[in-house]
Image (cartoon, rainbow, N blue to C red; front, side, top):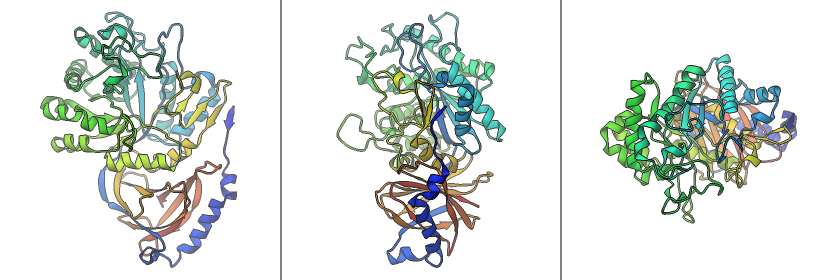
Length: 501
């Protein structure tokens, strides 16, 4: 059963619908208000393409922390508690025509698939529900004429691959390089050939730059302190494995699958901790790199070691030599599931300069995370009694995920208010309409004047999500362009998407 469902009727009865009706009346003959200092001046340039856009994505996390899968199997995503009808409802909400319409999927690869380096693989035991999620999502996506791009990430290696020989050991055993490479490759082959999944990329590590998660002597894996699987990946090791994996995969007939650099905690660490520099200085590694990846977690204050603002420094460096090299955010927080979270998306797109975004686990079963999840926001929560909740994060994420479809292009924008951000996606010769997203993360309503250039659309349909109790994604009116402008009221704590018609 569904624990919480929201109705469009609530939105229609809310004060925000009244605000938009008022805005429709005000828009007639009022397009010049920004110049008279009564509306915020913003602009969208659909004819100024910044970069290609691969889409937004979703991540189903199944096995992330358990120390012994045989005695304590973990199923963090929660599909194991739902019946088939409930699973299909969630699949439709994510992949369906009226859902998020994501185009990217991330699949973690846990350490439990091969007990010994020369032993048989069991790729099914600890991945049943993650594979079910992807299988059904791919089916739903193709039914509506789309397709998925899939990236799979080594969450952490088996104990035998480390010097310490225990789960979450810090250091790679140099004698196990080839065996670890084969561990990753066999999983990719299984997903492509046995499951028929369109796996496009293999990512080397999960937050493997975070060397201080271990004691100085590496004597403990810090299991039980809330961290997920990891191994330390210094920059030299990343460079070595980019080349090793590329060569091995080519030899085994997997040349269509790109190798990424792994996933530091944020773009600041990728840029300043040596990872971008080491790849830049190794011509072979840079040539064999298939995609730039990092988590996109944001921490702009100088108050802790988690400091990490959005930056494109590392991406810019690699694009000096390979201008068309793409970059994806492969995990980022849902934060408080509010307008500020969509501002974080804006930062990853316009400051970090990425081509795609996949947030952290979008469906969560909270008791399954040891010590409490440090990123508890999500799109869905599954309860232990078999009910699921559609959370506010879903409706905010829906604003950007539907606007930025695969194959579109990020377009340039401007806003003369630092609490108001615009994200724009041009059609880019796809069947998707030009779209732009207005993010107001202040507490105040704002009159906004949007100048639009480069679009063939003269009417835009608006959809609104707010931070009030409605938590909805719902229609908010039709706006005709007058003197190349749209004037509307943006409620405090809201995100509004405009689709060209």
